[in-house]
Length: 230
Image 1 (spheres, rainbow, N blue to C red):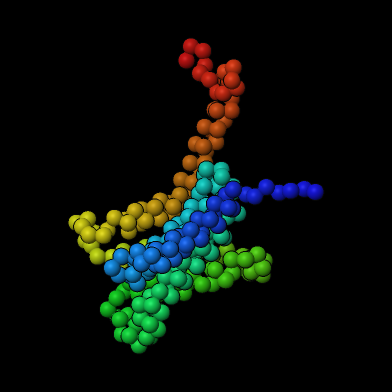
Image 2: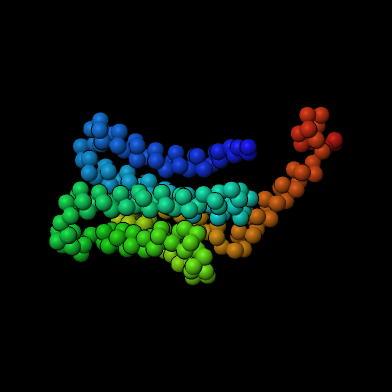
């Protein structure tokens, strides 16, 4: 009987997917969620959602430029974990913070743009999560690819939502601007790596380096060594 060893990358993705929730639950049970636990839940679930969204976006550059094809099989799981934490983030906001008082939420919408932008990003994310399975991929055909390109709009919206929700001065780099700037920079880099000429150039550099390592003389231990006289 053939036994399949567990995929370490798959295990890492699923452990990483549930660990933030377990950590949050443990902190909640221990009453260790700062003096404003509702805000802490919203911030932590939102940050984890954005992290998984960026990790799912990182899969394609890692495969096409870095040659790490295995990550493509984990892109869907990363995206779905991102959607799960985005749902928890929204549920905490609507159900815990506003106790499902939609009248009060509606009254606040006009004065808080980050609510509009965050809600828009979530609503756009819903069809991507629903159609992320193979059934919908086959049924939608080329439309599936076009639909899932919405992620290139959703990710910037989420970062803008993050930027507008923190207190700080981004021009003077004062306040809680550090994390939004880090996430915004990572997103910009991931989107830049999708520009075809840059992507091809970096892939060529990697292939040349791999070829150089493959053809380099090896020492007695079988490791690449230095050429004599070099």
